[in-house]
Length: 284
Length: 314
Image (cartoon, rainbow over the protein chains, first blue to last red):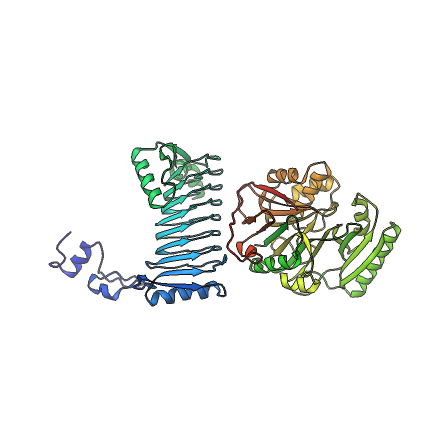
């Protein structure tokens, strides 16, 4: 990279992989100017102190009220928030775009921790359907079981369930890692596009059905393989990665990863140009 | 969308009317076109309890046609006359609403098929349930509205299942509301969340075998399907396992008998179910918040897997 102190504003931005050109006409997009970095901020984020801790009892709150209060506490600099009595409420902890230690003392309903980017979350209970959907970064640990669509469409971060999960875990995931300590239901990894799923227990039917890419590791029995899901060789680097990941995840640290099965995409389904040229031409 | 809930106390009775009301009310966001209860109350077991309707609720967004109350009175008279002709003695009679009645009947019969066929041959009359413990109460509105309307909060019993309905496949009326009675079997009821895609094929086959359908609601098929299996000698659990392949579509359903409660989930696990199980209580619902209404403390719950069938006894 060029010396940023000596180059022009335009070159500087281009050296950083950014742009300064201003588009006109119908295009409303504005590009990042490094000289104005202080004017840019990530909406909904705050400077928080992890040592500043508080508790929030949400027993008599609706989900929007609870989420607003979490946001309010972060704006006051609280970096560790303990949520009391979540009692299976839906949509708690959604949209947190902040570094934060968040602890739920109880279970969550549907869509808990959806669309988050950065928090470290521990849920001392169970979660309902679609936990941590669209997670972008951070770590979410569930101490008990989870419902279906666990980690749907996540793009990054670590999502860990120490118990068992329902069907369609990691559906449409585009990155990140999902780790399951128990069993997983049918259609795990359905249409996943990137990222990794680790299941220490058994998994149901149609594993990795129509997956585009990504990797699934299974420690137990597999109900059946889905369309285009195929076995692959478990390499030594895979095993090293698995050991490291399970240790960080506080789960299965002593698990014998050498006997795990590795499943990847056969890549025979998605290339429609090769598979269905006649039909495609017909459609056009 | 619809929501279903159920619970069974093992070894004791409880206020299941109030408990189920709380569970279904917690699920009202899943649908409040109609709500239904199948309550298994404590009775002496001597008489049949027949819940039936002689008309529809025409208020609260109903898709039914308005009828004069005098029509209901006429139908009731014919029902009374038919019961007398069959030698059935009405021990106790309650008319909660102009269109909804509850009879306690002294009637010595094991096969309810002929009995039910005669009663339901009266135009506009439908038996909602028949049994020595089961009572199916269903009407338009959310769980609290129906509970208040029929004073269900005092019902004591061992188990119950219920349904909060968002009408999608058929009309907003009582005949399409759940639970469905497992006609003509005493004390069998079913609630369902999902869509069955081979409804008409199965209906034609079952009707040719002499089974009866009262609505065009796909969920009714489950009750009829199980009833037909049991008529042919299958146990409840065997019938439920057969339904996993015999019924096509997405479904989670509960079925209850006089002394048991079961659940089945389709092989794609497309419909939700959360389950809590302990030595003395099983509670389950479409969402955990339903269970939390009876068990607010921290508990262990889980989602049954695809293709799973479970049955519990009282």
